[in-house]
Amino acid sequence: MNKRKVIKGEKHHWWPKGLSKYWEDKRGGVHRIDHKGEVISSKSKEFGKISDGHNILFERESPWDSTIEHYFDVPDGNIQKAVNWLASFKKKVDTENETEYLCLASEDENLDVLRECIVSLVVRSPKYRNAQNSFVESLRGALDKSESKRLIAANINQKYKTLVQNSKGCGKFAILFSEKREFIFGDGFYSNINAVTEHLFGVKVLIPMTPHIAVVWASPMACRSTPKLISIEANEEVVEVVNNSVQVYAKEYLFYRTQQPNLIEDFMSGEHRVYGRQGDPVDRLINSLIPDESRNHFGTFMAKF
Image (tube, rainbow, N blue to C red):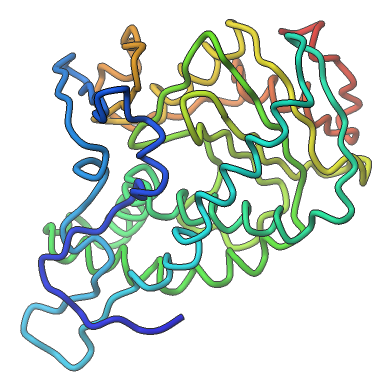
């Protein structure tokens, strides 16, 4: 990683341009709807960015001013490769709800590329940033915007390399494909990586990568070593579970390609929310795809969804 010069006021993307472009419609626009229901459309690169989001800036100009923007050069450079690799498994699934088990002993490098891409999306997301801010404020009291940005970037600076290193070889994946119904994205998505997470044992993430591909990443307490990845054609109920989870975990913005989502109460509240231990539909979905055998959970996908 080559360090970058600090550019004050630089807009840093938490939704990388290489990923957001997959949400462009035939006219080249992406649609954003806020928690009040207002819709605007623009080029994909105009969305998902924060001014000085990855800069560590002090109140007065200081030799300690720095940026962590360069940390994301590698995953952003690989994001298109990762999406194309995921899309290559679509041809292996041609029946709704039919799971194709794939033995990927030779695919460890691609899986680690995918893991780093996901980690980078998690730690840059407004949901994670909000969790960092809330954690610090619980210890120190309310922060102004500039101090909040500085401390969030400093925390990511401290945690990111550790999370990427600990992600290598961690967990298993399920790729969800949907042709008829589109997935949505937002300024939050289902993840149990929080403000103090360093080790990823027990990780659970569900993230839409494109309007037609979503990825589950999970590391149960006990599971078979193979397969490392499965792919499945999701039915409408599963797509609804994915999209509702985005609405629950997002706060201000949802993004979609052509199919405008019906807003649910959790999103319209204008808060980053999370599912509780009881009644978590994503947890049930993940355990049906990547069973945690320590819980003696062997329910099939068809039985639950």
